[in-house]
Length: 299
Image (tube, rainbow, N blue to C red; front, side):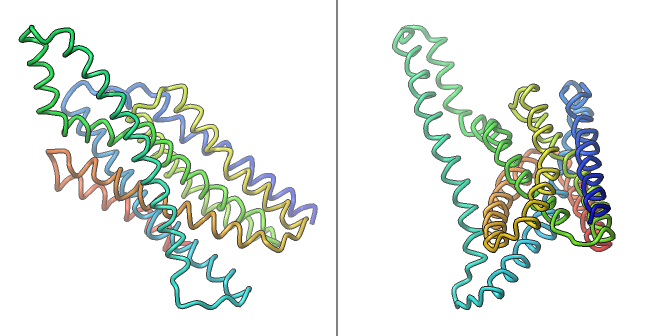
């Protein structure tokens, strides 16, 4: 038992250090924040498409299947039988939770923006330049709105939150193991998986409106999530909590719904709706998806 504990602590430290390393590569290299030439923007867009493919595969091949497996095991253990699709309903609850929160935030921003836009028109109604500026903003408002919201701080935070919750559950999978060989097997799989995920997350955060200091804070907190899950798993094994698996499954379902929203309404539409290199973008999305699918296939 003591050797098993040491293996889990080693996995905890390894996950922490490797996640920090891969997370700070896009955050600390200035190239990822620059948007100078067309070639530079195209390369960043293709990297973002690759990240979108990674998140798509993580959503469809990793997070949702893990959740459905866990919630099915919990419901079978508690002998819960219902014709209502409860697992899928929990995913939908997570999806609508993020949708409602985001629309509330957008409503407050639009109300504040409307008041700010109204003020200069009252003072400068006699000047043609002020009126033209207002019309220009109005005519291009739809495009500006889409672009700003595509990489908004709120969506970046929700992406970070959903991935962080999933990382906690990945850590739980290590902490709840009873053999050192299984701990090492799962740890190696998570190390490869999480290295790609945190690099992709860091790229999305750098390209968003999140400040560099907050990007660093997000990466550090995200790096701590899997070790936290390992620690919780060790504690659950020691405490023998009966309701632990049910709580984990419900939270995992809400995180899955959050991830569905972020993947399909934020990451993929932002890249595919922007003009230029459409076929190449799809190829890079497929490339990111294929890598994650291959890692999933190899276990």
